[in-house]
Image 1 (cartoon, rainbow, N blue to C red):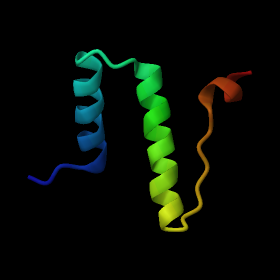
Image 2 (image 1 turned 45 degrees about the vertical axis):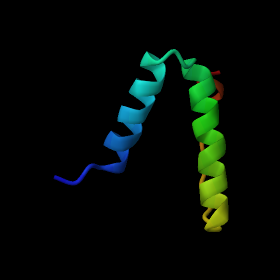
Image 3 (image 1 turned 90 degrees about the vertical axis):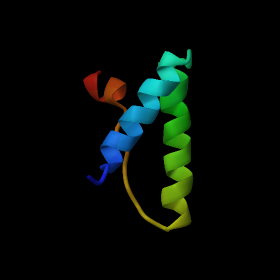
Image 4 (image 1 turned 120 degrees about the vertical axis):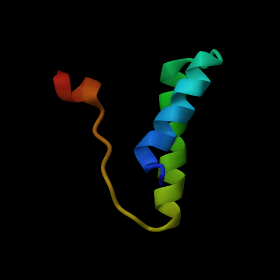
Length: 55
């Protein structure tokens, strides 16, 4: 069965956290890498910081 993008990311994130990575640092790294990937393909998107949205 084909693994979805969500499942692949979730598996990687869980493994990294279990190996001692800080969840916030992992989130920041994932955000930076996503920006690079989407920027490479000239795609536009918006990430909403949930913490800012709550204020």
